[in-house]
Image (cartoon, rainbow, N blue to C red; front, side, top):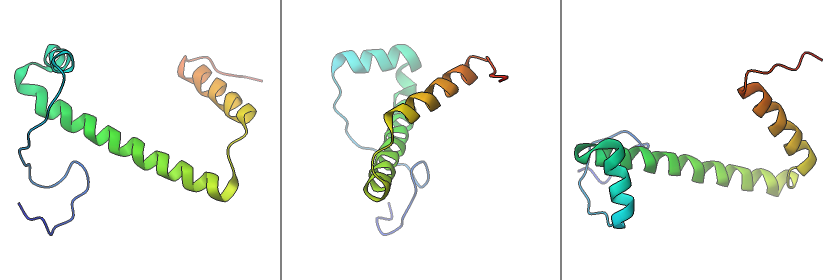
Amino acid sequence: MDHDADFVPGHGPTSGISVTLTAGTLQAIRERVGKRGVSAYLERAAQRQIERDNLDELIAAFDQVYGPADPAAVADKRARLVAGASGVEDVA
């Protein structure tokens, strides 16, 4: 594998590693995807975690510049998103 090349998550050649999981976690993954789907499942899970970490860093940087979000405004936006996700439209 070319260790000097830069790849974004989800791109580049594959590389085998050893991963240690608890028996319960591995069992739950295998029940979802079967024995042959474990690597792909873990790849997708790692990509999602990287996205979350990047988002956390972006939010922290935003908070440093502008301060934390107003909890009332966040609650209002969350209520609008939840209402929109349920198919209920606010016609007011």
